[in-house]
Length: 191
Image (cartoon, rainbow, N blue to C red; front, side, top):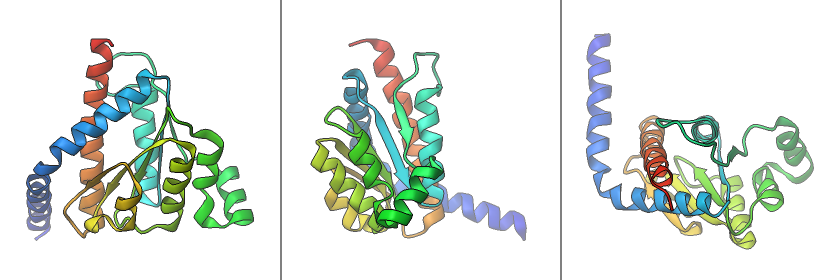
């Protein structure tokens, strides 16, 4: 019985990956945008809530340390990791401002803010996207459930065609890993 559930879950992921094939051009545009920012001396800032917060940390590490290629460290940070900033902002400004406040302090026109959300409805991500726009930073979102209001607040939205949080997050991470590969290849190829 357990093996049948595992097989069914893998079949569901495979079907979702197939349904996401039309996202390929948008994902390629995301890789181009990240590459442009990094070549210009910008930083990639990642954020999300819950499992998406863990994805933000995971992805920042891929750029700073390495993914598939030996190369120089790339400027990236997760806005989900500094507990003093997060708790002070939540306490003093409200949880909806925990990322926006950091964006206001760190982001500028050469940077990219990358938001991960399965619903596209989190108030703190919407506030962060608006703060990034006000600072002139580019915005990218990896979303699910039709994109929600966040899809309309960002420059590039990759919307996984699912309503289930787990498979959405798995596909977000898989697509972002493809982006890392494309960015590394572009940067290793030169200007």
